[in-house]
Image (cartoon, rainbow over all chains, first blue to last red):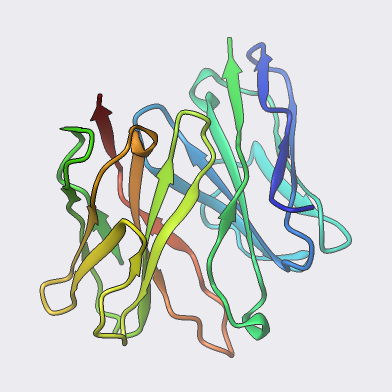
Length: 116
Length: 119
């Protein structure tokens, strides 16, 4: 597609439920990133993928958070047993590989997660 | 560790005026990139401008320009002839230049400046 897409755009869930957030990167971009943006805050790095592997998981806030990427394209961020503090906008970005020459990350519109 | 600081949480200017958003950063790296991203109410993060640290010339994109002071670790954004559509959150961001043998391109963002352009 022309840009990074994310779904759903908004998600309201009850505390304790699991949620899945989806990111579809720009075609041809091998690097994919997940960030969290809490109200009034900047962006907090969560995880990134180079192809299907995630060399840096240091940003995941707890073991309730996991992410996978299959086929070097779509990625899913899963939050298990959601808590109210998980409420935030989750942003996905993608960039070309190093061989592509550009390091700029292009962002999707985000998923606003509200945990009641 | 790298840090990015935006000291102005919120600013307002009249349409057509020029406004400058401040950003300072801290790093021991010599090769890196700096970015300004815009996030309008639609939430879509849009790259406004980027600067490569090894380039002395300040980057410009139409009405947007930066004042990059490497020694001072300062990277301010100037918006000329501001327009109502410039109303948004603006984030300054830092990223180490990639090392071929090891990929470590995490972007570090500031907390943002909320800019209001008044009619």
